Structures are given as structure tokens and as C-alpha cells.
Image: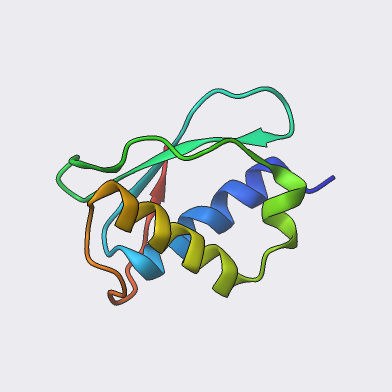
Length: 92
């Protein structure tokens, strides 16, 4: 099973490639599951709540698949436009 902390950092890093200055906020979930929301640099929520993902599911995705999933979540949430430049994204 993948290391949860490494996976969270990976999600935050890839999110930074999609949304400059964002924060990925992880919710408390049962072991081996990941759920998060994404906020922009001002604290405005861009993605209210992701679906629950099993860590092995995300670990199997390429970075491109993860970027595509994040863009889809953002688009469905009516958040930032798809495809923006990279920036460092924090984890909370």
C-alpha cells in the first residue's frame, strides 16, 4: 500500500501545476482513503469536496491522469479555468 503522506504531497504538487497558489486541504478519512478540497490563494473554495479515492487507485494514476482528474473536479465545481501554469501548492 502506498505511503499516505507521500501521496498527499503528490496530489498537492500536481494540483499546483493546475491551480497556481492553491491549497489542498485533506479531510479526515478512514485509513487507505483520501478526500480533499481545493482552495485558491485567497482561501476561496474551488473544489468543495472530492470523491473518496482509495490510495492505491490514485497511486496507480500517472501525473497526467491525476491532472486530468483535478481539472475535471475543478470544471464540475465551476472553479478556476482549466489549464493554468505551475506554482507551489501547500498541504493542510
